[in-house]
Length: 155
Length: 155
DNA sequence: GGCATATCGTTATGATCATAACGATATGCG
DNA sequence: CGCATATCGTTATGATCATAACGATATGCC
Image (tube, rainbow over all chains, first blue to last red; front, top):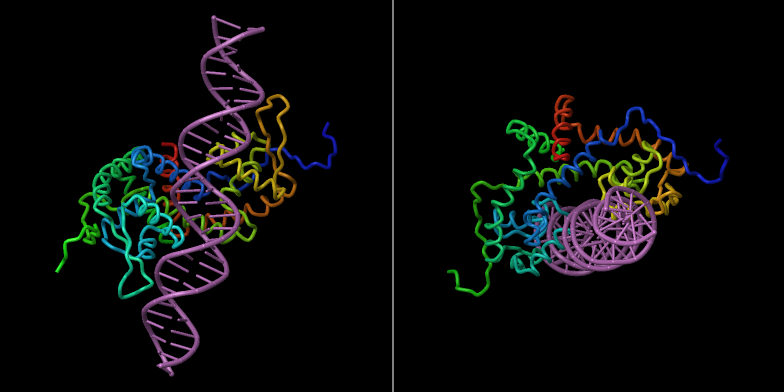
């Protein structure tokens, strides 16, 4: 028999008619991202680089010098966050910063020679990691996934 | 004229033959997750709940009392992380904890009455948020996406 | 020129995340 | 029983994240 209690422990399972956590895109996306990150860190973690850090370096490699804010937008990071990433990479001398002479608000950021070398070394590794993450999918499915995710991200 | 310098600023754009950041699943997943989270926080942020917090509450609602570690596994969080989430939700009296009498290692966690009420209030909101995130996709595409993401997450 | 507005970078706060090391408790098996 | 092994929760460290508030600098427009 269940005794009446002032405590509020309620341990019954409940059925939510139309709801399941597994049906929420956010939850699926979070887990898939965990998997992708894990695959990447397994391979480039030895270089003490995280996925966002490598994305930052790769963007600079592709685009050349960029202002901090623009760089942030191009790797989907808020100003406060890209700042921290830049500081860490700068401390490791993978990139350098200088003031824009014509617009004193801007901090121009660019890879150092060491940064370029590291990116070039890790580009093929990153490609392998993506392949590993996508291993469960065939070519057609990968293409589908990319299209669907791009449309989601753009809203 | 470019003067020879000991500094290593290199601002040339570079073409990486087989690489594009946009082609890396991890990057796409990160941005899609940002979008999904943003949609959720827009709606349930007023309740001061984050997506992982709500996932935790929803899992407890669905399953009833769970040990902290098992709860963490069921919402894809490491022991150290689920601990912090539980502490925050406990402080707000949305869940309660007690020791398992037969296994002293375990902390059993369950929703309070207030927690149950909040979950029931927010379940339909969460469903709306998922719908909003999925808005760019039609029914068939949503089903595709779910299948693909599930296979990715499971590896 | 001068002022309203916008952009850039910074600071502060708080919540996720992953990882490694650790003590406490259970469990399996000889 | 006794010990090796496994599991649970904790602690510590460091990296992402988002948000809000703020000063400094540019820009647009009168």
